Length: 114
Image: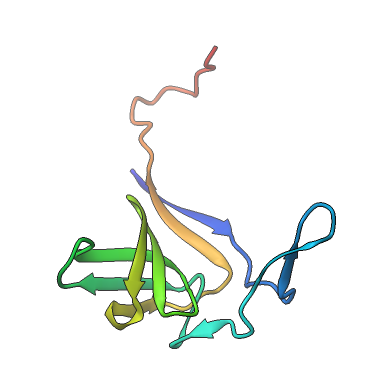
């Protein structure tokens, strides 16, 4: 039975610099939250016509300043997809949505695993 799983992901961070456990700066975040109209957490469908990553990829997008995005699809992450191939399915609302297959058709109660 397919089940919709919802996970709180947040809406980003105001803090522009991540810190190490000692308080020193580690990396910097972009000043803008959007690139080419997309922001991290948007649900997108990317139709890539040619190349190593050719095909249709649907999932949650993670943006980069360069316009080359990562898409977290059902089968794993696909890196380096251009913004030109992406179309919106849903804007980011702070939650991650996943469809998981769960089958408990035997009618039994849950069993303890030892």
